[in-house]
Amino acid sequence: MTMTITSTSKVVTLDGVQCRVWEGSTERGVKVHCFIPRVAVRNGLDTAQFEAELQEQAVPSPEVEAIPLRMIL
Image (cartoon, rainbow, N blue to C red; front, side, top):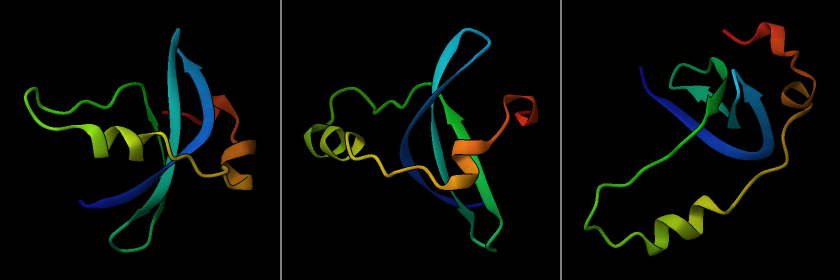
């Protein structure tokens, strides 16, 4: 499966761990929400561009803003 996701400004806590909410879709158009606690880049690489892009955050969609935590798998 391939997904394209975008970081949002929404942060939630799951099992005591803060996760940023990312949203996007699969290559076949299924909408997804991802709860990501960490993103890493291999040591030794120039990460300046990656770190700059990681700071970019979209406004969450109404669906992400309203998602009840009981719906998270």
